[in-house]
Image (cartoon, rainbow, N blue to C red):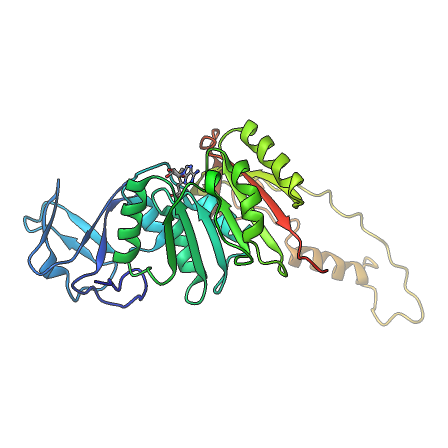
Length: 338
Ligand code: SAM
């Protein structure tokens, strides 16, 4: 059966939907809603039947009231955090960066290898839908079967074609078909000549290779150069978490300004301001504007603090960044204009 969840968002949970049970950002699980099933965890039992008709994102208490879960829609972002791991996977910071640099958008046809746990495949499917296509290749028979079943169950069968194939030994066997290629393989350089053939001849082609070691990056760059790719660049995505808090700032004491020297104004024939007894007609106006501007005004306690305490949001970057995942090597294949 094709489940609606991953393809068509609707406001309310229906039978057959995949629900992401959110306990905390580091504790999520997933299940398919059935007629009489239950989801059980340390907080108790959650009956599927009571979930039907609830709005996505609802908070649901367990039958004992010991705890609760949030019933979340399985977006690719949440799926990446909750999916069954069969391999190491790509996470959102890299997925976002790669998707942007490969210029993925609705209608794009692209290649991915290996499929692994299908983390990136789910994001790709959403980005290229409804008219694009993902050709994904995985050489492990077991992972291929699991990913194929998952894509079908998630209603992504018409967007993703998966093949069980060693792309380094046997290539992709595609020609003039795609505008983007993503490689997450131990020896990506072996797949590059075949990837080149798969690019559309009359379009700009973009390739990205995801490798943890710089030795792999060097071999990949050499192969890319030999195959005529240009604009070869390598990036690393590192996350620096920022902690933010609201603080009440104590005002700084205002510096006292020296009083402006009094200027004596001589009465002149054209002056319309009649001098007072001290001959200070114009100066009075000057002192008044000084008072109005508040420059010389003082606080009541005489400390010189003239502004009220203020709440401000401040941030502090973590001193350590999350560890290295992989290097992202990008390259461009220019169209054949002959
Ligand atoms: N990017 C995937 C994700 O986000 O879930 C994870 C990919 S995983 C790290 C690498 C996968 O490549 C593994 O499943 C492995 O079996 C597959 N693989 C390795 N060499 C391969 C080859 N020559 N042909 C096809 N697949 C290969």
